[in-house]
Length: 63
Image (cartoon, rainbow, N blue to C red; front, side):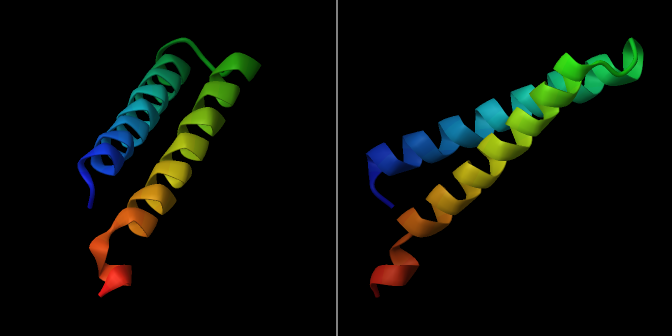
């Protein structure tokens, strides 16, 4: 994987984990709200985008 793609991959997955941690943690402590639900959905979306980007950027497909 190229260095630039690797950084983007790590950034997307890190943003996803932070959003999911904040959304789920706040939901468990305070209770569910629409904003918490949207943060969790955004975290999942970033996670899937990051996963697909990382998978597409690997060298396995070019061999």
